[in-house]
Image 1 (tube, rainbow over the protein chains, first blue to last red):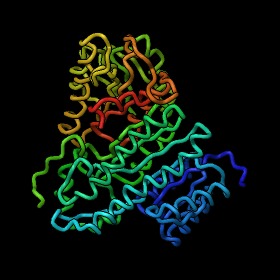
Image 2: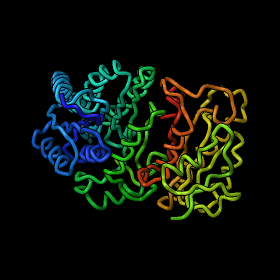
Image 3: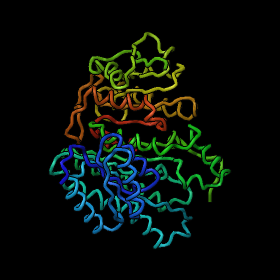
Image 4: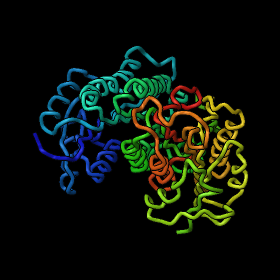
Length: 253
Length: 168
């Protein structure tokens, strides 16, 4: 076991996008970062980047929708680096479909990663946290859980993690385990930059700050919740005000 | 960078909040008689909500309202204690939409015990809320780390808010 006093933080889906920004922020804040991704190359590359910048990182490959693989990943991480003090459930997949196109397969694919994956990682992580009476879990939900066109499966999953977060905050509070969620709005990721510029312009009209958020701004909110000792069960929107009232001047359908 | 002001005053149970925010940000926090000159404003909102109006009219680019949780329906024994929180939350949300990209407004919600009311300073979490915890949240919301957080309520209450439907 590595004798390192720095707390171990495991970030799922950390190979790219928001997850990668969270991993970089945690490294800068002095965590040993476990870089989970289902893609081995992305996990290794991100961990290598953190190490090259002077941080400490371990790649960990697992598909979060596979509970056996998740349990095995935690076993391996605990042997190599010690207890996981911080878990960030970031891994997720998008899914846009009108209800007539929401097949059983589509629904199950979205829910298996975005909701079941959060359960599998959280359930495994909080076991040792209960014993040590210390730990922090942050799950990436989405502003979309409030409802948006074509988002029935995604919203159901992202609402599901809000309920899971609140219930576990109540259940695990006396064990000094804090459980919080972050709900990003429109964030500047490669996926967003691929959108039709005209559509993006219309989408941004529903954001009071008038711009997409940066992945570093989501990471900063996560880092705050991890260190905030009196906050649990919080759903923190990082959405430029979009969640306040986002009735758009256009209609989907 | 222009001044951070705490206004109108620190109630006894929040004594030291301004200094603690100052420590965290490495900048002075003043307690002026008038909120008009501040660039960033921490507004202490008591049950009456009297501080909300002048804060809304100020030119501050970043506003953080600090309120008690009575507006959630927690039993504070006095209906009037609930009004200030509701006014501040409504003001922050309205400011977020009205001002758009010109500044940010958010709320920190704390147990009513910090406003002289009876009631516990903890929720489901074992940790008891202290002024330092509140300062951490205020400093975060004043800083660029919260650059995309706008019109929101941050509950620094050990999870007490979870028992209210007004909190998601």
